[in-house]
Length: 123
Image (cartoon, rainbow, N blue to C red; front, side, top):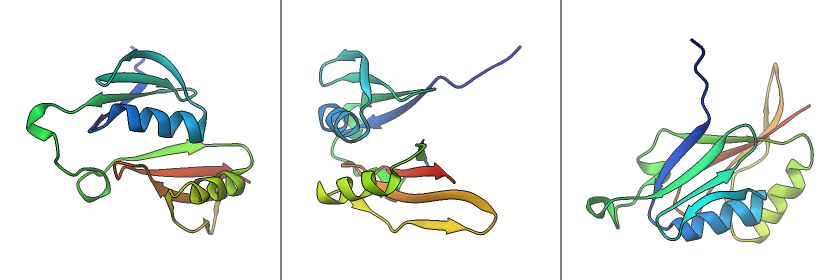
């Protein structure tokens, strides 16, 4: 049996806000949607699903303070220009970096709900 990951689901406070963020800045298109409750975005080889949290979690802060998840988005070029556009749009972005022996340019950012993501560009 072969098992493969096809979707990553994030439980979020504001589905519409994050739908806009990932569509506007990354160009992800909507695959399916229940307005304000659920949206699935085409993120390439995998789908990004955003699901509104249940009432018990509404108003509870999430993201980088309480999650050990980091989404990694790979791009073949223009990482620096995307990072610049995100910064101009007010998105918290960390510095560009490289690690010895790791043939990638990368940087981390934070979406509107505090979820950490990484942009990765192979050399």
